[in-house]
Image (cartoon, rainbow, N blue to C red):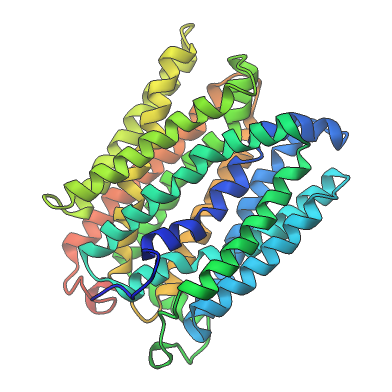
Length: 406
């Protein structure tokens, strides 16, 4: 199927939209210490705003997915961007921790409403292995956001206050609206729109045994990355004693590996299936998590040793994410929004819970971070094995019906 004629390539447009998530999280990480002082709190309480954002993002996705299946992708995207922009402006005036958490939640709901449509739009336009290839392109371009976001946040912090970071996010939302109104056509035509209950699409996805297991596998693998994001200010700034200026470079090293793995994934898809490549990614993540925990338990947990392992751990998502989404989305066309939303809500909810678990276990050592990371990688490996077993036993796997469903 051909890509809609656009002045800007579709992967670039979708990457710009998807970048709302990492920009909203990674851009303010270097400012957490300054925010804690300004709001009369401490950095560990300010870190709760990451989990709050993830939960709000999940709520936005679970609402926006079936809504876009019913009314189309564009209306939901613009509703989400408007809410995101308004909440971002309000965050520039926040004066308390409670206000920060509330507005971050509203900001995240808007972001989730908008971003959930990205993968659905890919499914609307592509089939088979092409889904994984295009999603890898989107991810590779989009990864410029988490790479640049901490650097931009540090730059803004050095010239202005942390509130300016949220002002920049509101401006980004306004720019996105202007570009997408002009360049992104509706990809979900009326004859494919779901007329039944908005929640019926979730039932279709959940009943699919193979897809269900892959979704849980992806959520578990992603939860480990969210633990890293939540704990990285402590790990780099406090434990390793790095400066706020050095932090973005250390954080960005992991993003570079994800970009590289997505680029390699596009090439490797010529020779291997998405299922084989995502399995390799899960194994990489598990082995690196185990090595990180053993290192953290030893007296030799130092930055030169930990950083390469962290890069492998986080970078493995470059093999896992696009291939898993491509595998799952091939089963669902008319309810692509619901399938995307279910993946997103489980990913972000799992990430928020894993981040909260780390916060609960945190004892001012890196051990709890690595324990939770290994836990999520182990769960991902288990669901991979269950998904492969279900896939081998099912017949008619290219349909969300028949024996592939419960």
